[in-house]
Image (tube, rainbow, N blue to C red; front, side, top):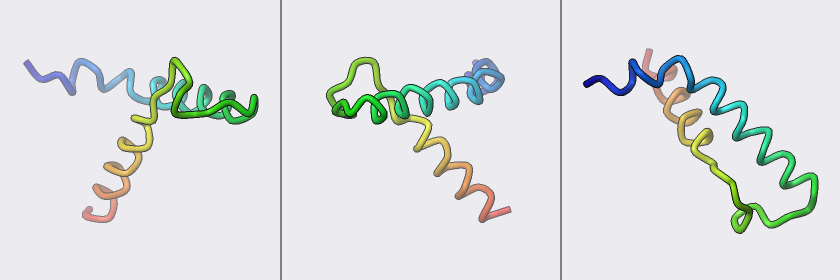
Length: 56
């Protein structure tokens, strides 16, 4: 099963949601790493995209 094909259409929304949540945590002066829920996976996905764009 090709999981990427299954989740591909949802990744942009997931990145946006994660960024927004992180911004809210920072805005409220809360500790980012101890906040729940929290994810920084969008940063990894952005880095992968940047790497792929450099190699195109």
